Image 1 (cartoon, one colour):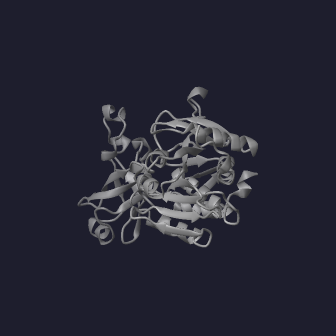
Image 2 (cartoon, rainbow, N blue to C red):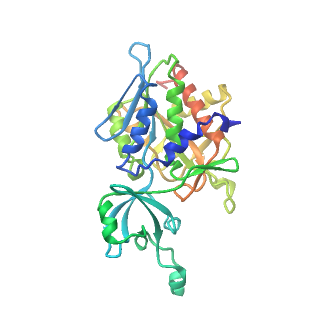
Image 3 (cartoon, rainbow, N blue to C red):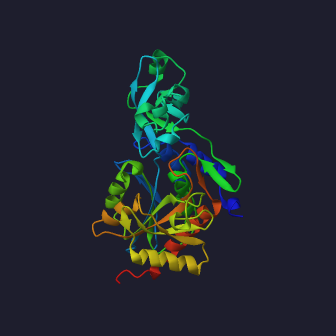
Length: 354
């Protein structure tokens, strides 16, 4: 069973650690502790990306970069009113209807639990009940006075959703599995490569500020300047009631998806076909992905190197993306790890000049 191959305590720790865009320090610290004795070298660039390196014994080896983003969608404190209610700036894309009664943590001098509040339905007019509440109408209630709040919290502090990771049926559930489940997968990839000879220098990059515009990958893509690159992210699994199969994008439990297209990237055909070939050869479960919207770090991995890179992406199908509880299938996580490891060790076979 795929779940047997997943280190659930580690995945839980990675997912539950706070790290809104621009506030990834705690996640980065956790990853450094996890990988510092595994990789050959690591460093943190000026943007805050964590770059870990597995070196090749091959002379003049090419560079192969994986990237998974550390940040999660979150909020920033922008105002505390006279009654202690906190108003916020969103950091990343939110569906406002998912905020009602959402439990959050406000990260000040100490963490404060809070809940998203808005006008209750009992107090809404008939017209108001027909409208979706906007982000601006929400506030955070920590159950404390303004004076108590300001002992711990100031303008500019970060706020993240709070929820524990747990299994529901056969599926992994929790907050911020976008992209922490892929962060976990990349950690396992770097561990798996520790004692292997690889034909390329492998850069396992954990990027910052993806949710607000792929910003960390822009710096890391330029700084590492890889020959090959793969972004590791989640994608939409619309295999739910009310949607036709043509709108599924991907399905849970059908394996990692090999991306062809998203709103920011047309993946390099050489990388797409290479990943398909490696998956077939090694009997790794996979599925194609054409995502008509959204984007991933792939865009900047592909474009920012001096000469560009041969870039693609692998995704983990996810239900309820950017909602309160996100869901992933263990089979898809394991397939991503396996395909990454094989893609690195067999990279000599890719056709560079086609």
